[in-house]
Image 1 (cartoon, rainbow, N blue to C red):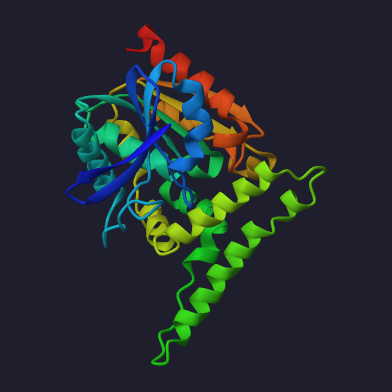
Image 2: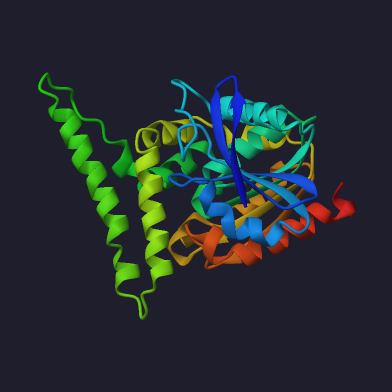
Length: 287
């Protein structure tokens, strides 16, 4: 797996690339980076030339521009394709990445072939009001605004809150109380820590961009084939299945449901996501 940087009008984009075949752009969740797609890239590399990017403000890419929108990040990814000399590509996005992927497919139909929109149920709620409420329940800890004080106390409070988030990753009870701890497991936690530090200044802004994104209107504008992969867990059962609702908004949509797939789906369910993605992208009937 190789890595590199691409120059775009909005800043430098860091990326990983692997494989050969039709180009496939991979867009990560928040608060992760392109590293999260390593397992999927290894599985898809035999048939696709994969590009996993750190979106602006994440990983090793340049900062997120002020007042950016999902449509701005979609445009930035088109500029990334330009830098790679790629005229048209498939796009797969997970959580925040599925918003950028959808905006790319809707706003730049001549540059996107097929799109794969992956997410847990809360990420796929088509009603903006209901989706915002579902997401806020998860990200509220990142959205707290402290009243500014001349002595910088508000900055210290924000710093302390970020430390709490980092500590939760470093000493994750679900990991540390596991039946077996390996160096590989701890290495994954270490990478998660690094990712959180890299993006800590962008988290609040990117979630605000999520809240302002009109998923319903965007899905209705997508003309190309799109696959929705809904990751369902028992704790989100109250939201109801959202995949079928998304399919009704898409002109040429397909649905795959993965039960028991959570926030770590790109790792824990990499094989399932790769299998569904490969089948969909290589199926000539969905053209």
